Image 1 (tube, helix red, strand yellow):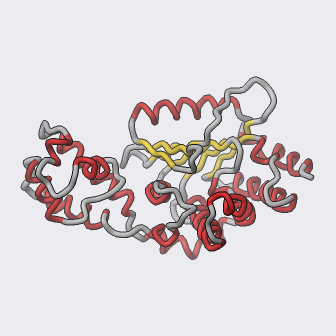
Image 2 (image 1 turned 120 degrees about the vertical axis):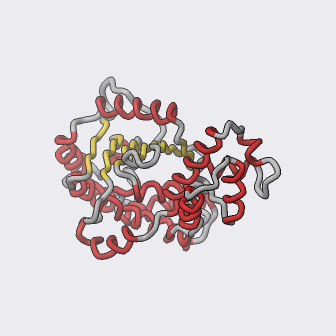
Image 3 (image 1 turned 135 degrees about the vertical axis):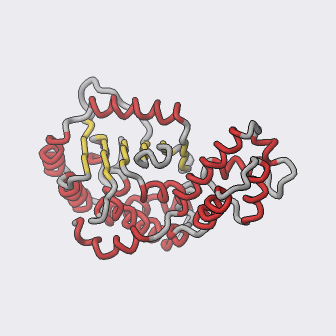
Length: 300
């Protein structure tokens, strides 16, 4: 399975990562503002961008599109040396379009470009999904069935379903590529494999795929059984670690279909502790293959 994407990944890995650049630039600008002793409203006062815009820039949600705006901001922070050119170079990369822009659609949450941009360059992803297999672990048939179920609810055309499916297939490459794949540690609730999505054949194929992926060196899958007294959490979430180069980010979905992200240390800490509890409650990774295989036999 992993080898099927090898030819595509080398090109993907060589591309610039605008989302990562935006986050890095935002972190630098926030640190420079704090070092200058300025509140965010003082930093934005009289500039050609708003306080809200600067908040989005510092959190990596957007970037300063014009070099003159960055130069003016750095001047206010007292930065006039070679650091200006260094930050301008980062700003140029941060302002470029992500490849995910071709997948923007009514089925794609507003924060998805940021999430996928971080997911692509993450060193490790810890993911918990109680009701569905984690996105990059889903087969194409399973993903298509899931999005087809949502189509009449969201009132989007069939083209939206296909875009969403292809984005999910593209995300799979992050863990299956030969060149520096992302390490994934996923905990999946037993109901994710009990609920019939797309039919029996689709579910059995999905179970087989989980077993294959769990055999990859960079993928660890644990199942959280429904029985017994175990720690549980109702909402799916993921923790994305960039290996110290950038602050870790935590992502969670909400009932409106939106995708929330936070890099606040307290938020990351809370979800990290949740994941530790879930890891202790789930079955050991070495039991995954047999457990999923037995569940597949029961699907009717």
